[in-house]
Image 1: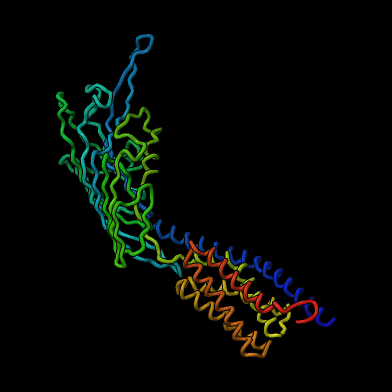
Image 2: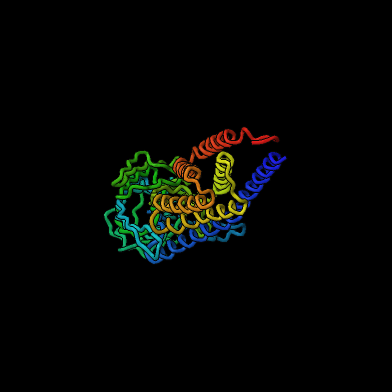
Length: 441
């Protein structure tokens, strides 16, 4: 009867441990909220610093816009005129630039900023009204506008130097046309293509010194767009609609080159717009942007959140491991003491979060795990008064935290590793409890 009662007690305790492990999901949700709040605060700091320095930048242009005066007669013979704009994209565009990143600090948060000097070269095709579908006499060559812009003009450290066909242009804010009405614009007088159609291309050069934060993007404006970027930053993220054709990433920095054809986008090389304000080609071009983002090697908040997501599983693993040690060692741990151990397991995540903001995730993980393992091991030793059982419990904790750390490093294999850990723990529990039965232990 006593043996049956003991087995019943162990069964009840096992049920309590399961309920307790699931209940630990509630503080895990609260801790997850803390992580999201701190991450949101970090993002707010980045936005505040970027707003005063220069936000994520995107180079837009150059684009030529030429007005065309057209007319038509209505049914009463009255002539009405209107102005449409012909927008011409470059035939060729080559961009070369280097980024000089730096890390700024506000309180405990880090913000990556950069300076960049860009050099753009290329040419526009010969300006042929017949190709645009208009008559030469309708084109107002003296009112043409060249548009060039960046996402955040606050990041411009000097007025961009623009040369079109040998003529130095002066860019003015709010004078942009075509797909980038918010860009800088400069009036330019153009020469039409001769009647024989043997026009020459119009070369251009743009030199710009730019400050920004986080990322730098380009648009595939030309029939053939070539971009080369390099920076002493070892953790780039190449993003956008196109990945670089060639790239080299080392501990000292990266170098990447893109080559994008006009066939890869939806926007034609030239088009007419009756109403400049309704021109939607700018959004289509922006959706085809490509470039690089400067990442920090470790996002402490993202990895801490991933750790919290595994909290219920690993709390159950730890408590079941202690239960196996309790049964195998023929000792007794009170359900209330299991609750105290569960509370200590929750402290690990808040300790990890607070330390990772100061000393980096990996080092913070080691420190937090060492503190919790030491704390719980001392508590277990005070309960069981056995060095051997205390060592077993400490080993269980170390294995759990070690396995979790490896899972965080091997994201793609996290499920497989977690399943293997569960199988190992299940085998251990089976080995330690195989003599439990209704008649005795």
